[in-house]
Image 1 (spheres, helix red, strand yellow):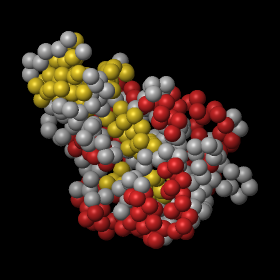
Image 2 (cartoon, rainbow, N blue to C red):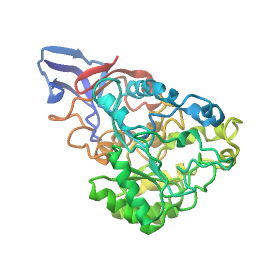
Image 3 (cartoon, rainbow, N blue to C red):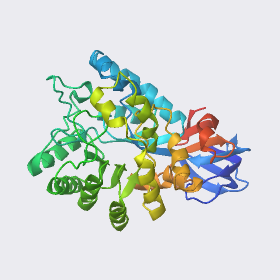
Image 4 (spheres, rainbow, N blue to C red):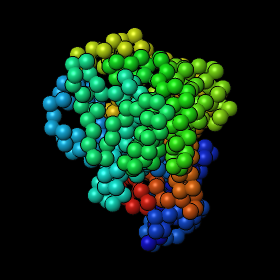
Length: 401
């Protein structure tokens, strides 16, 4: 079956302004982009713009915003969270996001369920869990002696806590054994973990070097949660693929990222809920205390990086802001240093390159997988983009609309 998307405008993912044209798809692949193309089936795209399938390269599909209510979550059955995942997948796919890099929580079962068609959702690269030092961002220990609900292990979801060169080396191998496509680490503290300081570095330089080297031996890249400036720099020196968040990224760190070609995944959307969580009594008090006077330092850091030309890929950290709000990231990037075209590139071809998928996805050109998003009206009106997505195709199959 040859399907032609006819009479629309095409944003091909390279940053070139949308142009009139037709798109021909066959057997899940793009065959031709041009004018006057013929096919067995015609999709009328007049008045619409065609986009490549979008990416979110920092998302947590196995969690929801309500998990910040730790007391409530501690009293839910262990399996309850698994039954929320299909809705998270649906909300993400409905936004035209056909590929994601999960930043901890999604296991190999989720990935294979999507691949096999058991669940409908975006294709997924998984990190399984986040590697963290003792007392770090992924250490679920609580002073009461309990373990936080998000730190419960099960077959296929190993504990992420590790220390020392031998310990981090073994943990990389364990996480890969569990199915990780990419290794996720924390080289600084975090805001939503109760006992650590986001501004301070985690893992020594030697530990980070060992993590990246061991991952490379197994053909894996490393994505790095990092807020503090020193945590960013240690990770960049070690050779991580991306710095995710970069809240306190400074000019020296920007220069290092430029020199080494390190990607920035800014997750600006996550900051939209900072004030709300700081004032929410259901959020643990140690977390609220971190958030009360935080403001939006990540915005200034992102501007500095964007203006310097650091490579950017779109990631949101949803559900820190709820699933379904992911496209807010485009709006924030376009307001704070990127042109609208460059923001959309960050969510398409740049994100595909970050994930190593640039030969298959990220642009609308012959030979690529036919992930196509049909948008009514102007695709650069990001504020209303989510409401104007009419259809989403993944590998040439209509999955939304």
